[in-house]
Image (cartoon, one colour):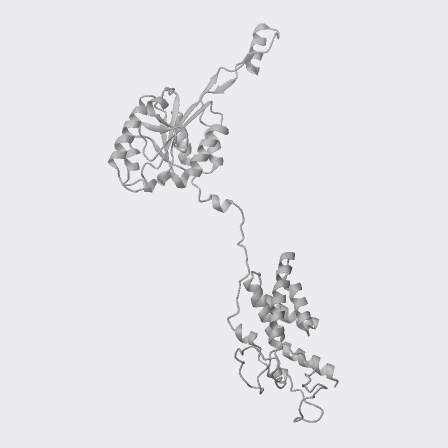
Length: 398
């Protein structure tokens, strides 16, 4: 068997974790190593690097620099390296670069880490080994004296690289990222008390039709009746277009215990103003307690008195209040009940088309201020049926 084939076979054995065979000289098992012309021992033909240790050191450095690699990638390098014949450090570097780098940025970082590791590896490969095949790793020695005599050569299999012992630690394990399957938004909407589509659908039933539009709607029945009565057709009969004159006043509780329901109150205001046929929609806000102080904007920066807000309110104005009425706190507040009762009395003196929408479930009203306020104003829970019942009360049919 030739020397080159023996070296390749021993390298493959070390790569796959097998113990390398001891290299014997031609002069017998006890023969000394071959000495060159300068009197220094000549290294044997087998390579003086450990692929497993080098791969582990490179893997650990790349992990620390932020590479998204784990144990699976390390095992893949060992398998592919064996198949592609990574018998030198440069071959191992090429295989690792192909497997672990997915972008130019990662390739640049890989090259930097490999240059650092290769320099460190070369320094420790040229360091003088300890005498004897079973000696412990050498301690850090002081700077070498250039006039000192060179140490005797030791076979590569007796070398213990400090890099392998310095990096002894648990292998970092990173589980692969598997996103959870999401079927859509339907599952999330089941937690909403009221959807935007239900709001748009409910506003269609809040109507006060008045035939005061332009006379441009053809009345077929009246046209036929007049033609039969006159005995001849002279002209069609038109009637006025019916328009919705419903006037809605929205009083919305903003902030505090109503913060989790801001999405629904915002949708309620937007659908009433932009996606309905209501002639006039006026919105005011209050904080926590409905009393004689209201606000023009949802950020509550401009206040307005209740009397000024009800100045344009008449008997055909529908008033819808949206608040938890103290149900979120779960207790009875006498001051809250008193102030709310006074404000509701002022509202009822202007109009009887009044309804209250509560986002808290009905069972949460018990033993709270909401239970007392519900006896002063018709209160409905905020879901599809509750909004439909509130619209009927705003129409005067509840």
